[in-house]
Structure formats: structure tokens, C-alpha cells
Length: 208
Image 1 (spheres, rainbow, N blue to C red):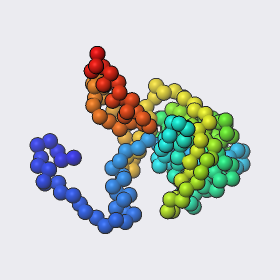
Image 2: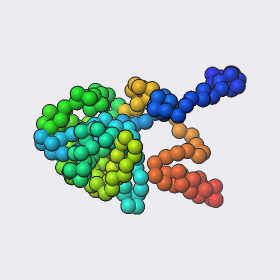
Image 3: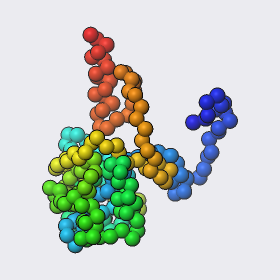
Image 4: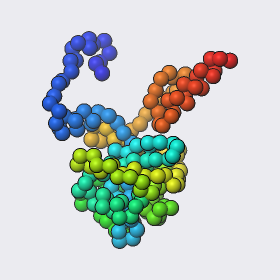
């Protein structure tokens, strides 16, 4: 966005060829939450930091994660038939960096680093996470150099939600600043069906 008072024409589009670097650069400006996706027990534990995750459906409950074909987690999810998505809190940057490293540990060492025991499907939990979503594998879709794992949500665990979420943006972990919420903020994009639910509440108030 141009600085206040600047003419938008002074900031024209930078048109780039459609390649990996261009897409990576564009997406670096899109802030996301951060998760650690896990699967396996004991010596078979694998975990990986991921931000390409999405809540797909509320009826039925479906959740999707995107995992590179060469990632160690990919075959583990296929073998186990389940995975857990741990939503990291703002004090878990170290855990995110640990499981984002190509040299990240597996097995019992990874389990110890996560520190939260096991979820209902047997996948490890990250102690201190905001939430953990346990999924049974439903479908696998090819997505270029990634595989898309669609899971049926079988259990949701909430942690200390007084903490803020860990945010990833432009290669770093910026602090999320709270802003006062107006009574009616207008259109916005929320989680599944959140947009419709908010608009319905606004219409109901206006009818009164």
C-alpha cells in the first residue's frame, strides 16, 4: 500500500514472469499462522512446520494439509493414516524453527521436543500450542511437487487460548498487535462460514 498522501500511480504493478521465485515472493507478503503437523508413534514420529493448512468443511468436518513429496512426513502420514495439526502460539517460534529445519529430528527425540504426548489418533501433540486438530486420513490429492492430505477431524483440543498466535510474514515472525474492534466492522474473510454468520447477525440487528 502506498504511504499516506502518496499517489497510487507512483506505485505501479511490478509484472513478473510466472515462476517459483515470483510466486514465493508474492506469498511472502501474505501473513499466515504457523503449525507443526505430526504423525507416527515412538521411533516413527515425524513432524514438520507448515503454514499451507486449511479448514475445508464443517459438515462433515474436514481439514487439509499440503506436504512436499520429498518430506519425511509424507510417507509417514500415508502409512499411519492419520495426522495432527498443532496450532502454534506466539511463544513457540523456537519450535517452529526446529521443525522447519531440514536437519530436524525424528522419532523419540522429536517426540521429546514436542512434549505433549499423543492425540486420539496416536500422532504427537505440541505442548503449549493454542490448539491441536486430530485427523484420520480421508483422501490424498496430487498437487504438483506437493501432496494434499485431506483428513476427517476426529478430535479438537484447545490449549491456553489467552496467548496469541504465532505469525509468519516475509520470512520472519512479527508480533501481532491487537486493535480495538468496532461494533460493526463490515465485510471480512473469516473461517469456514464465518463470513455468512457475521452478515446474518448484522442483518438481524438491523431488522430490530
